[in-house]
Image (cartoon, rainbow, N blue to C red; front, side, top):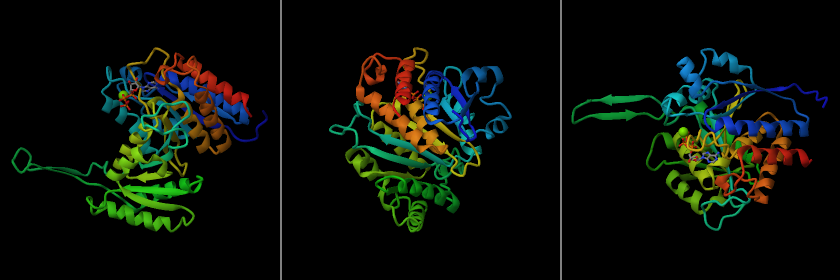
Length: 364
Ligand code: ATP
Ligand code: MG
């Protein structure tokens, strides 16, 4: 089409293992969405953040990765990790964690939705019962390196590690979560802390929730202790809309949430720099899955759903919703020849990707 808008430049990093298989399926769907909605998406692929690159260069990323990637509007990422060649902490700290920190991606987003046709682990729950968004603080909190050991090697050996909460850091992730809640039909926010046990930092978080909530009178909110909240995720998942938590609690909830919705293969995530000073990164929740890599049977839906989140972030909510609807429609058909083995089908990564791309093109 003769679209007047400027192109969105997207850096594509397949990474390792099934990342290399699911990313092409995700790109098929993004191209279909670009055609259907007359969007200009320009993809540029990079071969770093994988074991082969590490073997050749002794690093996961080139020295000037920041300069290379800064000019992009988003990063479409597959999966990192190939423990046979690179220890997991090396590949993770050498790539994804660098992106998060340097590009100030201080929000981690994980939508949790029970999809039609997917057998979730919670008895009696069907589509519509689970549909919430976990917002995790991604740059400070419990994951600080402030601390150390004293009296080492003695009976008094003592280890300390501090939680760091800054007003700027807490407020900005809370505002992001309230903004998300405001845009959803239920307009409800839940905050997770543990203020009865962690008596200095967690009450501070609670205090900031109360302060920021005053800016959002149209959003209702409540708060839970993290232990009770974890139980409610399993027992009453229909209670939640947007759930916001600190780095550690958010980390746990953002694995527990998708686990309540069935296969790991369909869950997406995003690392967001809301001010758009740096590119945000979209990656499926699953890893590189060495056990099934190279066989063309990985479920591409997590990667495809990431594409929907990326379209939303780039300012195209209708296209984003359309991709999600296409995923749901193909899942609801439950054709065993189309679905991948994790969904009890006999289909392939490319085949399932193609089915969703065709659905995106076919329906207006
Ligand atoms: P991480 O890399 O985040 O540490 P991990 O290595 O523990 O994660 P994954 O690579 O996500 O775990 O794989 C966990 C299990 O889930 C494996 O058995 C893998 O085959 C399966 N799995 C992961 N992603 C998919 C997918 N897209 N389709 C089908 N099965 C998957
Ligand atoms: Mg792994």
